[in-house]
Length: 255
Image (tube, rainbow, N blue to C red; front, side, top):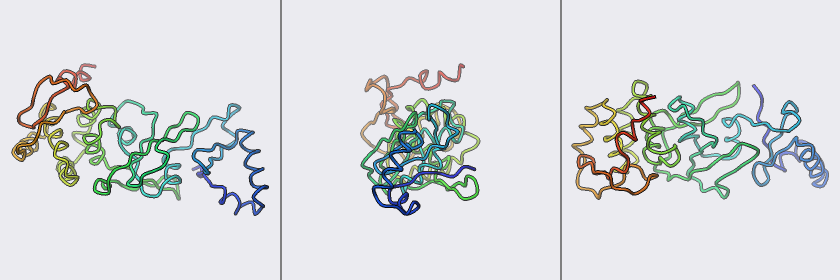
């Protein structure tokens, strides 16, 4: 397993044991040779020689992200792909964090990292996985990935992708835990989206009925906050303005 080669100027200085100017000369030389990529102000990624003449190379995001931020988990569309919830390949690595990061989007070469600030109240439901002998990374659990998708479909390719993920994971996810996690974040519209989508997907009907009974009088909210605010229909059972037709939500089943 390759080691992560992300470091700061001070880190390089402690290794090289040289003066500031000498260390800057080494860094500048490596950048000119395309052996070094600055991925964030003051943070550098050492590109291995096997990257080729063009100098393009991308470390596994699972190894890079822990070097960029302390409190985090990899989530949303990236986690959906990791857990095989989608066949789509997101080119952005979505990272959830309770800390507001100055640079919300980092780019280097063809790799893009987007940091999504979430409240402490939502910062839970992730697992630590091991990669190689000594490296670890945090990623949202399957259940929390579904909940985050219902909360922020804008970071998951939209509500249609979340619907597909629910269908693909219907036998691999603990839906009681999904329900409990949804209740824990305390955003009522997320619970309503869960109940509605379970109903049209036609599984876990006992759970959707339970959610239906819990719905009290709330202002109607849009099913898909990423879609046009077109009022196609209403779901009185779940207090939703349907701006996506059932065919739009389930059309992928025909392929």
